[in-house]
Image (tube, rainbow, N blue to C red; front, side, top):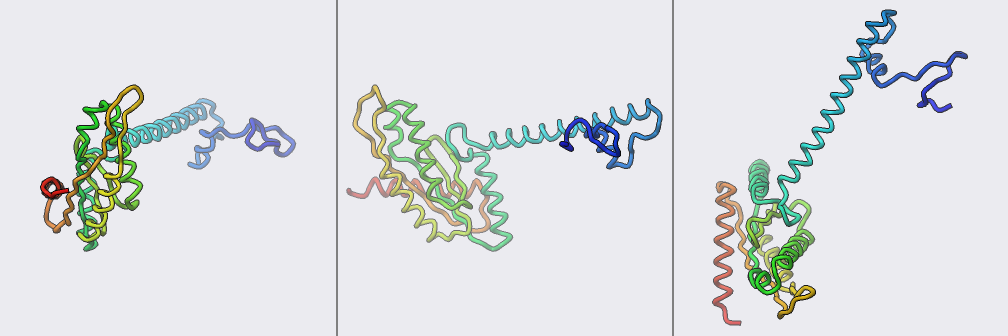
Amino acid sequence: MDRSGEQLAQGGKIRRAATPAEKMLEALDLPLTSGDLKVDAGLRALAEEVLYLRGQEARLHRALSFSEALADRDALCPVFNRRAFVREISREMALSRRHGSSLCLLYIDLDRFKLVNDRFGHATGDKALKSVCNLINSNIRETDIVGRLGGDEFGVILSHALRSDGEAKTAELTKLISDMVITAPDGRTGEPVSLGASCGIVQWDGRMSADALIAAADEAMYRSKTERRQTPK
């Protein structure tokens, strides 16, 4: 006989299986054996209410966790939004300070993204942004963190990384993004666009705030972009 069924056979008699509320009362050393039906009914009702509230609390906790996760994600891309990214930088800074480890921030700006939007439309531009995010996520460590800082600007937190590590990762990602070619969607015409990326890398000095570190990496990115524009091809 299935012990989880409605009834159990014990000592030649049929006994109803204990309900969750009754099991909880037994665990609390409050079994329904007072002989007073009103007292037993009250205890059972109280236990059922406690179990219901526990279930509600668990459901609310899951819903809150889901909402917090949504609030942290960028509306379009599978990465952190700027607010959450700044928070993650602050956390990584605290860990870096505690363990005496290095930390770098990589700032990426797409070079010809506006041309993609102008030539092929914003839907194609959105797909291009998602593709860039997937590319970045596929070429970093699990401990690294990616965030979208603006329309076509992204940040990557490289934990336990020196500037030389950041420069190597910058060169790798720049090459991968530069190899991306965006073509016209169905129903549209136009020459394909080869995406490019300008990147800035800054190693945290142990003093800068999260916002200051982002600003420094942004400035380094613009210097790189200017130098690349001025360099004859």
